Image (cartoon, rainbow, N blue to C red; front, top):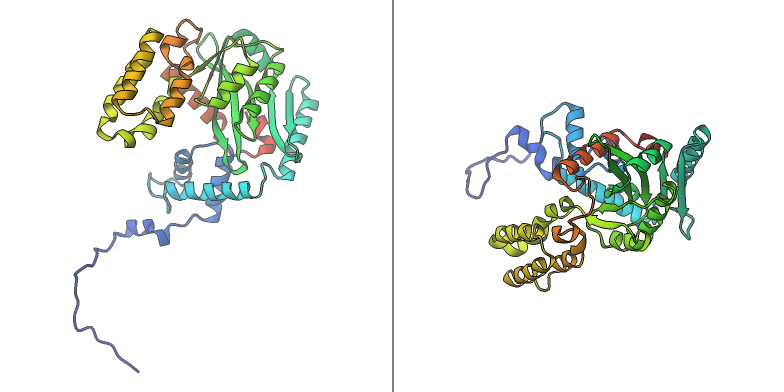
Length: 345
């Protein structure tokens, strides 16, 4: 039997050993167990953002932040891989999900005649939209429907559908629910169908103002379906995107750009805004930047000089944005399957 003896040890190019609590962070040890995978998918169906999914798992396991056997990017990669499978299979909802969802709607309607829902299917007989509301919501809209927030930034990732919700604010400053929708995609056609359905739910009453995310598809749909309604893009859907869009591009000049952008946002005169915008674009060399072009094309929906005088009911403030986030977090925070999703909301 051969025997081996250590005769020399060289520590050159060696690395210090990891502490015991750091070994789990090595790629070979970062595994998402099957039970955690199922929980992650359940939370993603409810539209919960990835960083919150991680927080929920930590709380459920009773551990401190950063103590999971996998990282946030592992969760993101897992969800994206599942989403890719759904897209490659060409499925929005499985046949069983679709049948159960529509059967649940019918059962709800039979139990409560004031419950209202509608849906649309595509040429492949798959559900492309399903919307619902309640009699109480219709009554609330009749009283507080002058200004409506159409929130569409939550996504049911595993099914590749966008969750939209129409919200308002009552006399006490509390968020009220007008209706909900699940959409196959975010095209102008899909948004138009959703808005048509919403108006039908609300007996044809148009809101004075509709507040949305920064989305050209929504802009086009609102212009086509709500021609007498002022479309406003909340600044809290714009400002958080600026860093992602421009910080790397501008480097050390980004802080100056951000300051000038915020000043232009508050400019009183449309003429001064447009002059200042052209000056800013030239100063930072952004003439061909696509996000600059997008923001300028939608300026009449977000710059103060263009939306001043329209009734907004303080629904474009930071405080209201936080309340909406808390409201949606509360109604989407428990495990949700599509067949009972509308009941939960």
